[in-house]
Image: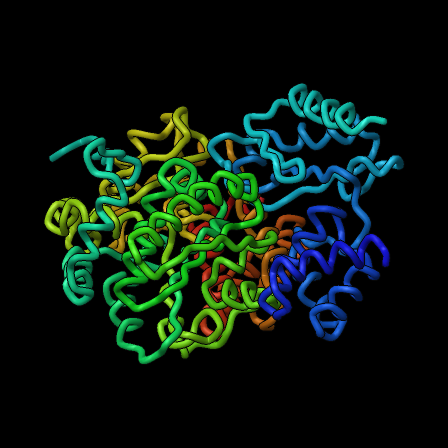
Length: 157
Length: 388
């Protein structure tokens, strides 16, 4: 059995073999793999007894259920109005320069994907970004770079 | 007349002598009808933005004949400029759980769910730990009610109640046709009460302090207080619980930076109020209601950029299910860009206002229906900034 097979079976066992479990199963996969591969979605369809199109249809609706390859760390900079006013552009530029990628891209070593996101709910402490599930408010370009560098060393081999 | 906004401390207040579980024990000794009557009497309306009377919602659901019913706490706080629900769940989660349990008792539900937006996943660990303790306390008291958390995955429209149910059921977060309303067919198509996080805390607090104390705050149409999320051009951004029914001018005196030219009341889907209307605008259900989002803009801000930002947001977050919203949002965005570039005459703005009228009538849910709020209020009050 492949790694994905085992992972999906475990998640289905944990959440139950019903349609209502589809979101938690997909979320659990993304937690581990950062994105949903075609293989993963096919296994989910088989295990939950759903058409593959239903799985893809649901997954592709949600911003956080990515269906294209993503890096080990997903950085999402809030781009909505208040963060916009407080300088999210500078944060994005700083990260782009540090990682040498543009927004929407993944670094060659697959460690980082840089994205922008709609309102993250920290308008009083903008600009703000999420790295995976962790939130970083009150950013400055310097602070953002330091956080990125910290993740780079954390996951360094 | 009082010149300052009245700050209130109900939501975040933590009494030393009365824990949320004490409130629960005391409340569950009363009859369900008695609790509903007190909620109706309190005048409490939903704090998520739509403002439906909470007591009535509970009464309708209680009256449904079904073995299975659900209580859902809507924590899919996605409206730009709103961040109070996160703070409530972080600081006083037990009050939320208590409100949900009271609801379960009143309507006859055995399961409650908190639908937490994916952007707040960092809260999950502590929230689940506190829920374990709370759920065990319920079991120890032989109360047949348990609360679970379900996560969202980054979709603004899932804050719309029927889209939220679809998401919980493992489908695309596309709103359903209404009726039937959630009180009849909600989660799993069973009778469901879905309340905003803040509403559930007010329920618990009304059960503790009584409807009279709550009613003493606010106005006839807007009873009580409300948690406001204040952001933008303000020296003191943050979360404030304020009495409802104040004029916007008083709010701006307190929170503005002295140079406020507009306040967006109610988030991206709310209304933009220009300085000349501050004094005549009441914050409440008789004026402009809000889920709590108050974004201030000073004279250095381009309202074109503000409107463009909102329209980009709606274009991305429209679920795409119905044409008026999917195409409407795109056309409004393209339209203001074309007017700005001079490719369309200024009169095109009036054509687009007609389009928002169509969207209000024809769009399936609140998302498409309310895009006209920011669009029309910004176009009407800041037309020059859009054109030139």
